Length: 315
Image (cartoon, rainbow, N blue to C red; front, side, top):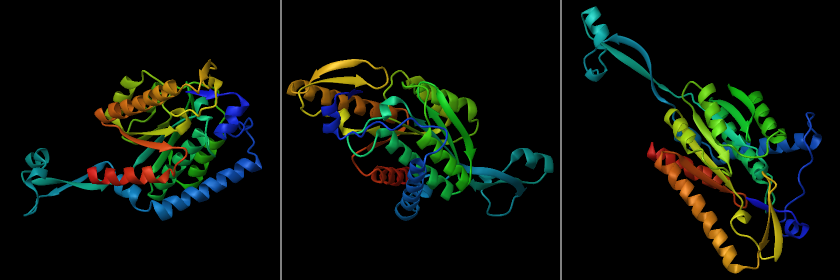
């Protein structure tokens, strides 16, 4: 998505200056930002989303526990015929509910995320969303892992439990300085298939500024419970009327001169953007992937809670 580079457009969009380069040493400002985000997301999970996460994600089903002798009233469909044949009397399989989940966060930190027409960049919203999901997972004793990517795998944190682990994940998301600029959505999906052998629930958090990742998406969906979280800024679909401006693609550096006073062109641009987003959502649904759309100018908890409630009803 092209972004404006002229000062008047930056002022119009109310886009703050790009953040300073991040160093390995955390600045006091970044530490305060991490603490603020931790307090905010912890509040959201405890007071607003209490119960929604655990109701939506009930575990991977029933896990085999043991075999025992058949007793009158037991379900005959649970008879273990191999053991029954060896022991010369009926035995049944017992199962317990497997509640513990492994939650994987796949977070896009490409250059297109350094854009926002309001108070927050898209990548800042993505970090807050990831933090909410991480706190919800830890609160319910689930493991949480992280894959940060651009057009390369930037960083990987294996799934673990604990508050210290959550602190590490949030700090990494907020302070990470990527080497890549572009987006390659196939890479994190391929990487997830390689490093995560057991079943997991995976949230792919991105603005989806990429193409030709559908085959990897289908493969990942076959093994994992995959949910797409699309981070959207309203200015990407609706340009303001400010005359002739140069737009720059944050990932490629390509520029384009656009007449924002051309009402027909602006209308067509908005229509194409909305259609592309809807087509993507329809495709995801067709292969069993749910989509959560989060706009940078709206409360981000509402679409997450709404999705959790819909998921609870479906399952």
